[in-house]
Image (tube, rainbow, N blue to C red; front, side):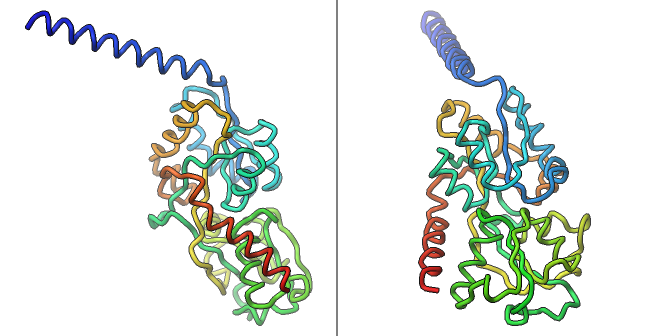
Length: 290
């Protein structure tokens, strides 16, 4: 019995040593710091405030420095990952599909809404009191998309318009790309444009700070869009990619999640965005017909 106990203790010690060596070997492959890039759904200052607690959490969990970077536009994050200037990124569904194709992006986690839904909804909004309460009333008015690579800000409403037989360039008197959801919403609020496309998450993120729900008419709501992903560069060490995924999933800080207007993150994968790829293809087909 004594010999068996000694043998078990030795075996346990060997397993412990092997595990330690395995973890250490994995960390030897890790960079001393990584860059977390995000698409510009709002101003850099507001993005830094919203993502601040999450970035601090990532640094603690990973044990390495995490640099936070807000790109000038959606394409900027895709290109930055392509040239290895960004290691981890927060994408929208469409920009992720582009990044997976061009930059070797690999989805590891997705955000979950405050209602527990792993997805979000596109909105079309107008200013309260404008009398613009449906798409027909927006004909001949000014319009704002967000960014060409935005899902709810451009892709989803463009498909909707095409299905209605509408060419935005002809239907509206002027079409602009605002650059971010925050900019589009503020443009409607200030009267700079008459209508714009955005989504419920980014709309909610500014409530009580930059606008009130009563400032707008929400005249259209899309079907559920797959949740935005957290993606890593495919060529990062496997152990680091796993650690990044686990770090996002373990983020439970209430104040931090409230800033992001989400309830947390769950594991994600590339196949979750096959439906978005079909939507991209559908947009091209509809535009050819129109």
